[in-house]
Image 1 (cartoon, rainbow, N blue to C red):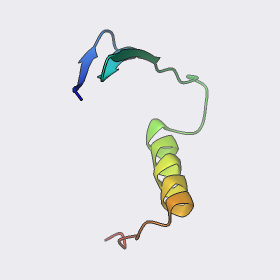
Image 2: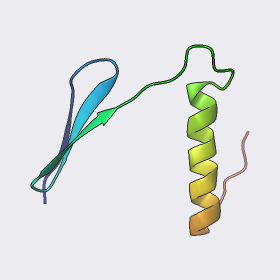
Image 3: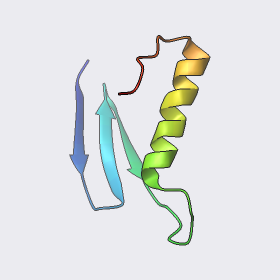
Image 4: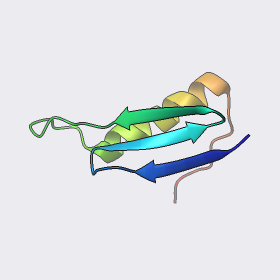
Amino acid sequence: MGDSSKAIKNNSFTKRIGATTYVVNVHFAETDSVTAEDRLLHLIRNDIRVNGLLVVAEE
């Protein structure tokens, strides 16, 4: 199964998984106090909690 991705613009990209191509649009409110890094860390921590993955201590 092939897996490739290609940037279209700064706010969207395509992701091909097998025979299906997904177009992903990314947007954040400019007035939001939560940064993109904060959001990504939240997603990672949630995935670790839900899937019971091992956590490596931060340095």
